[in-house]
Every structure is written in structure tokens, then in C-alpha cells.
Image (cartoon, rainbow, N blue to C red; front, side, top):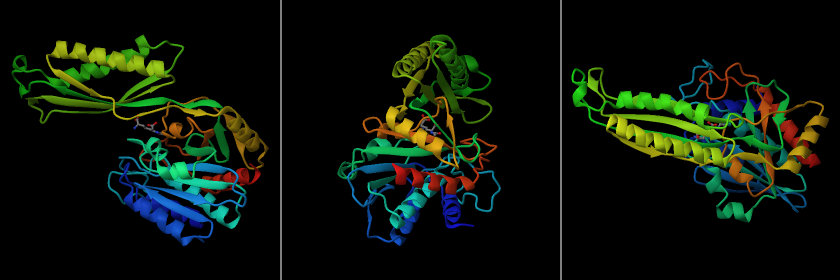
Length: 370
Ligand SMILES: CC(=O)N[C@@H](CCC[C@H](N)C(=O)O)C(=O)O
């Protein structure tokens, strides 16, 4: 097993939720401190880390972002290096993202480029979001990159595939939490209660009409409810229920339209079920919009690369707070093929570890020719 695979497996065993990545941060720091320090400067930010590698000339600074948090999923891969944290899993590949960043960082120390590099090990990508805050820090301002890039693993593509496009790559997102507060009571006396299980079930169904009936069919949007909770026991009518989900759109206008419709529907549900409905839109991320020229240059590089296969993909409804990093600074994100039969956010996701070495070499070549 090579060292990067060992690192990936170590990180895979300690997934932590957003802004709770204490062991992950400690692991990354220990590795960073073990490297020759002459070219290195690093500063911690919350549970994340900034690492600067001084270049030979240092005219420009190139930023590279790796997200570091895991998901609240119980791992079911059965691997000997499965998560040691019950109910937590690196099911979105952030263990790969971190390992690849460490691999590139290590190579740059041994074989520096002219430009400075700023590595950002960013917490809380899955929620509530770390990127927007991280780029408002003094450290970021001090070491500000002239361009930033990052990758996300893609289970659906074979090893060696790099998929991206100029312009819109990932959607706008908004979390969605809705609480229903009614009047509980005995299961045999429904007429004396306001049943919040019925109210929330009807609401979940009603939400499905937003995309099918309110959004222009030529546009695209998603409203997903991923969790529903309510009630206490089978023979008590529920006084409270809660639905949790996410909204995805390709434009701010559609996002505003969906939020407005949800608020209107909530007013309707309050009248229909004689209850209170409280909406919290949680954290929202701006879209990932790849800067035209740097993305085209990167795509041309990939096309020339003997080991890589370029695929110009369509935009996806996934979200990424990386979008904030390239809102005002040129940059891009790309998908890295990892060939897993199970997709992102699945308890059996099993990315092929050969993608780590491929990505490190690819990025290394890109940086040396950029
Ligand atoms: C790449 C990826 O899977 N990102 C997440 C980002 C989630 C943001 C937020 N918690 C939300 O659900 O809106 C995704 O689910 O796309």
C-alpha cells in the first residue's frame, strides 16, 4: 500500500461533521508538520487549515481547496478500514480530496513551482458551509490567490476521467427545515386534535407540485425532502412534526420563486390544518460558476495529457460552497472519475483508490506547466 492510500484510509476512519473536524485537523497538521518546513507557512482557521507553499519566484499565488468534513451516514462498505465513528462516513469523497491535496503539497515541497500555492483545507462543506467565511479571514486576505481550483470525486466516471465545463457547473442550493406545530391527543379522538403527521405528509406531496407546476419546464430545479420526523408513539396523534430537505436551482430567480411558493403553501397549511408552520431556509450556497478562460486552459491541458480523458459534462444539481471561492476570483472545479458502483452520499460508496495517484500526478503536471 502506498503512503497516500494509507493516509486516505486513516482519514476515512475518522469522518467528522462540519466544524467538528477536530481529529481530522489534528491528523492533517501532524502530516504537514512532518514535512520539510523551509517553504511552508500554515495557519489554522476554526477546524480548517491554510497552508502556503512559497514558490521559486512568487509572482502569483494559486489556490487549491480541499473540503474535509464527513456525513451523518452509517457506513456499510464492510471494509477493514471502515469509519470508526458510528453514524458518520466519508460518503462524499472528502477523504480523497484531502489526500490528493496532501499529495500535491508534498510534491511541491520537493519540486517547487514559480508561483506560491495556497492550500485551503476547508471545514463544513456539507453544511452549514465553511468556504464563504474562510475567504473573509485575514489569512486569506494576506495570502490571497490569483486563481483557485478544486475537484470533486465522481463515482459515475472511470479512473482517468476529468469532467468539467466553462460556466455553470453546480447549482444554487438552499437547505429547508419546516416545523409543524399542532395539537396532539388520543389516537381515537382525531376530531379533538390537529394531526401534524397528516399535515406534514400532505405538505411533502404538495411540495412536489412546485417543480412540476411552477418552474418553467425549460429550467431545472429540485426540491428534495430527505428526512421526516414526528410524533411519539403509534396511538398518540402527533403534536409536532418536522421535514428537512434541500432546494436546488440553476438561477437565483428560480430559487426565490421556490422559496416564495413554500411560504405561500405554509400559510395554506396553517389554515387547512389549524396549526403553526415555521420555515427555516438554513444555509444556502451560491452556484459553482467556472471562469471561462482558466477552465478552457485547464481543459486544453487535460486533452493533451497522455493519462487523462477529458469529458465536457453538463451542469449538475449538486451544490458546493466552493462557488463562493470563485465568485470574485477566477477559478474552476472539475469532477474526478473514481468508478464506484454506489454514488455520492451512499453508505456503500467505494471510490477506486487508484484515482488518488492519478489526480496527484495530473495536478502536479498542470501546476508545472501553468
Ligand atoms: C457535492 C455535494 O454533494 N454537496 C452537497 C452540499 C450540500 C449543501 C447543503 N447542506 C444542502 O443540502 O443544501 C450536496 O448535497 O449537493
